[in-house]
Length: 461
Image 1 (tube, one colour):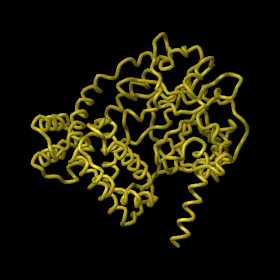
Image 2 (spheres, helix red, strand yellow; image 1 turned 90 degrees about the horizontal axis):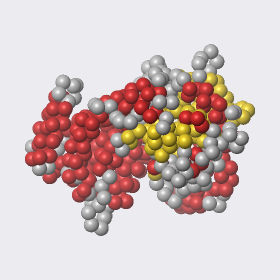
Image 3 (cartoon, one colour; image 1 turned 135 degrees about the vertical axis):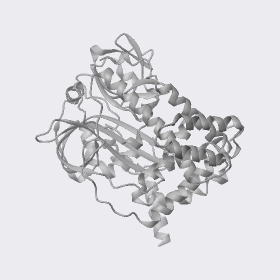
Image 4 (tube, rainbow, N blue to C red; image 1 turned 60 degrees about the vertical axis):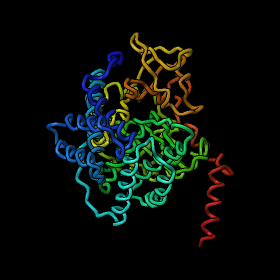
């Protein structure tokens, strides 16, 4: 496995990073207080897009902001330029990774066009409110925010969370607002995670440009074999991601991704997540816990390789040899595997699945942040591994194989273990205990909150 070839990023990445840094500095300082040096940095950003479709709009936006013409369309163009630069970085990095792994680049599957349907009028109103709020944040600057600027947006966010068409917006904006309120008010100069907040700001602005288009899907039936999982969350959302092989009759195996999410509050952690996710994906959790295959019937599959989960359309089958399945399907990974739509591409979202047999790596528990691959120490994405007794980096000791996500963050490639094969024992994955933990949630935080919410609703009615 020639991962050792991924020592440095492609040459084209550094100039793109420099352009993005200049824009992010302006977002931190605030567009209402830009100095001449920062205006020149924005002009350099415009020159970096010379000859591209965004060139004219970007020059107009920067000129308008320079004369204090603060319009949401100008900031939307800046967000689009930032997203385009990150997308170009993503594509260059994926090409590098696939060349090192000797596999084809992932492809979007061909899908029939989805029928269009006008969104409810209130969706456009809510998105306009989002753009206005994001513009106000940019004018003030991340370093100059006040609680009075943040709290009023909560009413808009509540309305967004109640709109099914805007669930993606709600997940992103709730996380952003929570982070901002965590920092402000601050005692002394706040510690600004500039890159992260700029990522969230620009992504939110792009999503707020138009109502979400209907997803194009195709109905799939066959056998789903889950062999890796990841758990991602912030205070207001929990997201379980499962990776597996889809075996459809008459088709070669395809690697797919299943993502199930639930809104929550910050006190819901650990076993409480089992009750939340179990309400929408009980059979998926049972299959992950038992190492079972699943028979799925007419389940929608997106062009990106994401399976839209419907728990009632899944039936448990027999147990699997998960490590064998992962080794077989990842050894010569097909082009049809999880990827991103062009507008969603970002270096931090790269997740190329790889399988490493014991002969391919070495692990020293005294230095759990690296793994030896091909005679070279390769970083482990320790910050992405959820705090869980089900899977920890120390579990890499005495293993016979591992499934990992190849990541790029902080200017370097790293591996995030998502399934560890200990040999005779069942493979270790995050989320294996969620199925059993559903029974433990009785009388816990989740049940208490549901009971209190029910009382409040009965009083209001």
